[in-house]
Amino acid sequence: MKTNISNIIGKSLTAIFSVLLMTAFASCTGNEDNNGGELKPTTGRAVTLEMVQQRQALHNVLSALAGVTVNDTLGIDFERQTYKPVIGVEYFDEDPGQRVVEVYNENDAELQFCSLVGGSHDLVKETADGYMIDLTHLDCRQDGKVQNLGTLTFHRSTDEMTAGYADVDIACIPTLKRIVYLPTGIFNGWSGSGWESPCLVGQVWQKGGNYYLCVIESTPYSDGWLINVQPGRGNMYSIVAENEKNKGAWTPQNVVSRDAVQAFVYFCIDAQFYDMKQAIIRRYPGKVIPFVPIAHGKGQDCSWDHYANPDDGFGTKRQGYAHWVGGDSELGPMYDAPGDGPEVLIVRNGWIGDYAWIPARSYRNMEMFCMAPRHGTKSLSYWWTNTYVYTRFEDEDFCDWLAQKYPYTANGFSFRDAPPSGFGNSPVYDPAD
Image 1 (cartoon, rainbow, N blue to C red):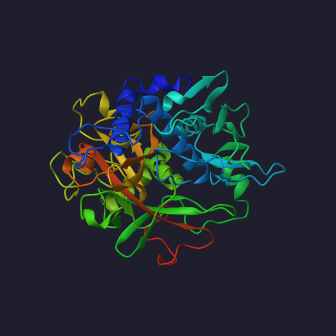
Image 2: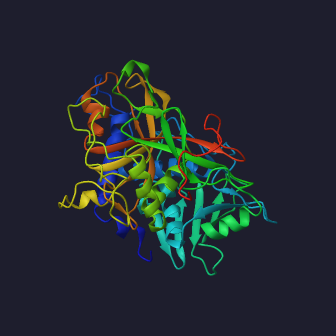
Image 3: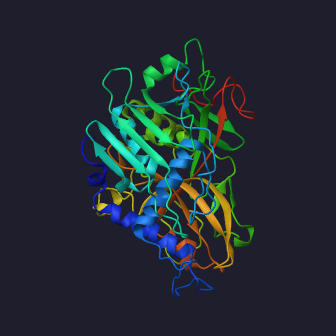
């Protein structure tokens, strides 16, 4: 990955930011019914594309590094706060300011670093030996206050022990100085000496009528994860706002970590797991590796009760791809990069945000992992939070934004020295058997 990150996503970047900008405008509309009237910000200041970029990057970095949930994306306060890092695991070394993140290889490390800004990839600049994210002199607030979060600088590896590292200079996360990216083999040797995880990658576990895939093994210092990914909303969700019945934003019942969602995608895409994945699909068709949902279309309600070709979705038989839609037909460049229009969304959280006086309702938020419908080993992906406000629910609002998306919902349970409660003592499927 030697090219500038902006060149990787090409024309799709403009589409991504168009979606974000429309979301920002919709969030501060002055039209009472929010159904096509003039859009007005809550103050006299206009919302620009640069503001949206910076705001999304700020939100995603704070969420990824410190687990910060931001209710109001129109103005993020962090200057008087001190956060503890949650990314990766603590590096038990003479330097307590380091955290370790497990990756597959150097390319994975670079993609994970660049995705810290969500979809705002223009804020990632290439350096002589890596990349830099500069989040200083931010001008993304409605009140016009300039903010300085800090910088992150990724350096490519110069040895065989690491896949790269990132220096962190962020005042509100003072105990985080460096992120070290370790390849899986090195990570397991460093963290798991003498340790045996109770659940192993590729095993399928069952709780009630749902099946869960182990995508991260536990270590003495970090939790492992079992994850369930279902098409649409699945059967384990709740609507964020009860009065929206079956149409509004939703949240999983058992929120799973970002790392587990990414690990699920990597499991589906990595060649070393291909045979294992296909064996799981044959044994539990659609229950562990989900089929693709029919894309939501304008005018429908936000429910999914039918699915496309079972060879599509995450169960694709195409090696080198985690997700595929559309058979062999040419569907256009939007299917090869995340952006406006067709897009895969893996929802991992949802919540009610701050109250907005214009219009007089609370923000609705959904955090999701975004991918191209045809997602391969070189494809870009990113985290972001869709935020919206309205006074009366209309299809032109949230459901219209979902048009042509392929949504999934992730639930999960963590574990350390024993399987999670309710899962029994052994998997229902073990690829080693």
